[in-house]
Length: 411
Length: 224
Image 1 (cartoon, one colour):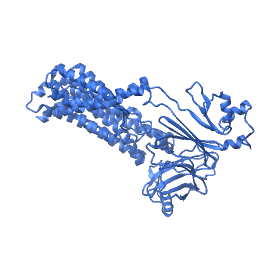
Image 2 (spheres, chains in turn green, orange; image 1 turned 90 degrees about the horizontal axis):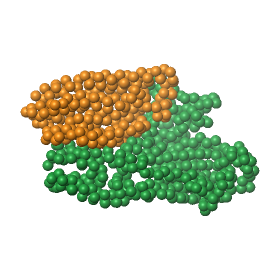
Image 3 (cartoon, helix red, strand yellow; image 1 turned 90 degrees about the vertical axis):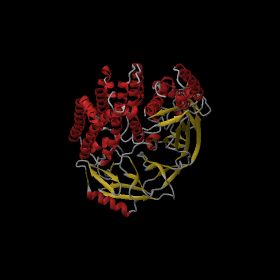
Image 4 (cartoon, chains in turn cyan, green; image 1 turned 180 degrees about the horizontal axis):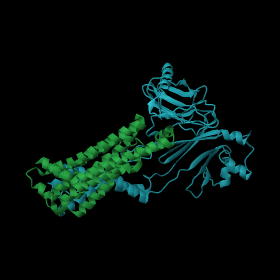
């Protein structure tokens, strides 16, 4: 039993050290790397790049250096205010006369990161009144859940509002909704221009639009192509009011849902995987820049307002694992254990194994060192075999752990 | 014999256990006193909204996060430090009972006291939560505070290990290991974010319950 207690303590030390040592190493030696901003110029019909860390901050695709002013002129719909201030805003672009206010309506910014996808979701939502007749949205006093039915709970009394719950549940049931909901997606804030309720996936993988209009339920099923499943649905509130939401499918496609006619329109882009990559979508009067940022790469795909692909550009950059400090880490540590991860908002044991086997060299050196320690302590090598194996498997973590908890008396 | 050992343990820790239990209940009471005040002064719906969408963690009020840790530390020190003064633990080892079993009974009694106090706090917390909040918010809060209570047990087991260790050098090294391991239970996280880690954290907590046997063994073998 004492032997077992020792190995449990050694395991505890290995776990603790595999969190702390690589973390200290990163804090001491890791170099930052900022992503470039790659945008499509509607003037040049080519990509323009801003690299915050580089000496030549502003360049085109070929690497030709640009001044800041030249860079901004090539992206007039992004830097409109500055160009107007400088008096250099063009009257027309691509032969089209540009009305600044009108073009501004089509500007949109969207961003989603994997840690927003892999995050605990609230299970209760407020259902706003979509047509209250008031200029501003008002927070309702109740929140809803969709389990075996749609239930509204009054925050003041912490009790279920039976009449409202029955009314909404009945309408959902009659429209073919299969309880419970598996995903509820909306913009649960009063700080938006108007309310469009929620896009809800039911247990039969059907998509419904649910909102409240003058106190009554509004439920509309959205026709989905056979077998279409979504990784996430992100509702948007853009000033052009052309879309309800960006929809990211399981096979890494991107769709938008249009209002009123509930059409799903596909963006002609590929590998849009919000599970793994940060996705940014910048829309303007002419195009959408769909940017995917992963570990060591950035890719911009451009589609026009009809969602057809115009062009694309990708760059890779060194990651921690390929930079010198990362390679030394691979020699020192067999693995890195983290309780948090850049791609998740959960706390978990995120184990990242070393990309190479260089750490085995250090393990071998530490096994030899441990052998001499054992000899010095005049211990029988056969009783220490498990310790040596532990060092072989866990490298520096195991070496420190078995020496913090010595088996001086345990044979 | 066992009853006497348990009674001896109770005599050592009783005041610390009572103060910890009282402190825990006061802190839980204070959390909901604040909650009731906030309910009165801001709309209930906005209070719920802050919890659901603005990451307001009402259960972190009054440093509740550290209460199980401090309570466990106090009980472990009260229980094991007197045993190291003049090596009184040797009297227990001289009793006609299995030495490991005696240590385990000591440790189990301390852990049981911690469990009883934690259960009282959690029952009170759950009961009061259910008055103000729906099941979803209560469940999220309980998942979020669960690692803090597991942390209490881990701190208790590792403090026992450190206090009973006869060599100062190793006490310091065990303290370093504790400093690397305990923060795993105390990460700042959104409500329910700890849910995937809880099973493994629970396993580690249970495994560490035998930690005392190691330093107890070294003590018995006369390591200086």
